[in-house]
Amino acid sequence: MNIILLSGGSGKRLWPLSNEIRSKQFIKIFKKENGEYESMVQRVYRQIRTVDTEAVVTIATSRTQVSAIHNQLGEDVGISVEPCRRDTFPAIALATAWLKDIKGVDEDEPVVVCPVDPYVEDSYYEALKELSAQVERNEASLVLMGIEPTYPSEKYGYIIPADKEAVSSVDTFKEKPDAETAKEYISRGALWNGGVFAYRLRYVLEKAHELIDFTDYADLFAKYETLPKISFDYAVVEKEPRIRMLRYGGQWMDLGTWNTLTEIMAEPVIGDAVLNDTCENVNVINELNVPVVCMGLKNMVVSVSAEGVLVSDKEQSGYIKPYVDKIEQQIMFAEKSWGSFHVLDVEEDSLTIKVTLNPGHRMNYHSHLHRDEIWNVISGEGTVVVDGMEQNVKAGDVVTMQAGCRHTVSAVTELKLIEVQLGKEISVHDKQKFELDA
Image (tube, rainbow, N blue to C red; front, top):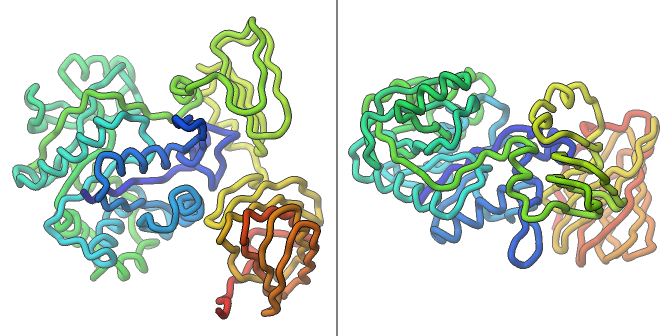
C-alpha cells in the first residue's frame, strides 16, 4: 500500500505546546504500554506499520517540519518537501510525482492520501487498505472515505451518498455548513469528508498535467512557488464523474483543540503537577521542571511549556487562535533531526540555549557572520570540528567559536551542552552551511 500523509499546519490551537515549527502532530502526549509517550505522527506511523508492514509511507510537508519528522520517525521515512504552502492539490501532485520519479512507483499502483494526525483505531487502516483495493478494481477513478458523523460538526465538509451500501456512488458534496444545516445533511444520510481518498498514481499525474505545465518531479518542484493555491477537493473531487465512497464507522477524532485532545488522555496529568481532591475534569500537561499545583478547578486545561502557560476552561480553549496570533516570541523549543534545543534565556545581545544531541548524530557544519558562540559541555561525549580542526569533548569542556569560523559537533553518547550566542544581530537566518570533508 502506498500512503501519502499530509502534514501541515502550525497547531496554534494547541499553544503553548505547539509553535511555528512544532505542529500538533509532534507533541508527545499518547501513553504507550511501556509507559513512554508518543506523538500523533509516531502513533499513526506505528499503526500503519502494524496493519501493513510493507506499506510505502510518504509524508508531504514543509521544510520546517522535516527535522522533527526525522527526529521522531528516523531517516528512512519518505518525505516530499513543499518549497512553500500551496494548498492540498499542489502538495498531493508533488508527492505523487515524487513517488513516480524518485521512488519508482508504477503509474498503475493505487495511492491512498490521508491526514497525518487523526486519532483512530487500527480498523481505520484496514479501511485504507480497502480503499486501495477499490481503486484496483477500476470501478472508479477516485474512491473517498465517508466517515460516519458523531455530531453535526461545522468543521467538515459532507458527502451525501446515493444509497446506504458500504460502497456507493456519490450524490453530491457539501461545503462546511453551520450546525443547523449540518443536522439537515446528517438526516439525509450525509457523512463527514475527512480528506481521505485513493486513486491510481497516473490519475493524479494526468490531472496535474492538465492544470500545470511541468515535465517531471524536479520541474514541478522548481516551479512550485509559482503554482496557484487550490484544494484537491475543488481541483479534482468535485469535477470527477467516476467517483465512489467507502463508509467508515469506527473511531475517528480530529484532535485540533485542547478540549478534544484531553478527551483521549490516558491520565489527567503529564509531567510534574498535583491536583487536589476538589478538582473536577482537569487536565495538566507540564513540560518544564517546575511543579504545578491546581486547586478547586473544574473543566479546565492547564498547559505549561517553554513557550508559555495556558490556563483555560475546556470549552473556551477552542477559541485560543486569535489570541496566540498576537503573540510575537522567539521559538523556545524545537526538535531537530540531530536532537533538540531549549532556549533558556533571551537578552538583547545574547541567547542561551540547552542543546541535546542524540547518539550518532551531528549538527550541520556551519558558520555565523554576526555572532560568536561558546559551547559548555555538561554531559556525554562527542567530537567538535572548528575550521577543520577536530577534538574530542566531554563534560566540563568549553569550546569557543568566533564569528565566521566553521564548526559542528557530533555525539558519541547522548551529548548535552549549553550554547551561548553573543552578538548584536542574533538571528536564525544568520547561518551558512558547508560540506564537511570525511
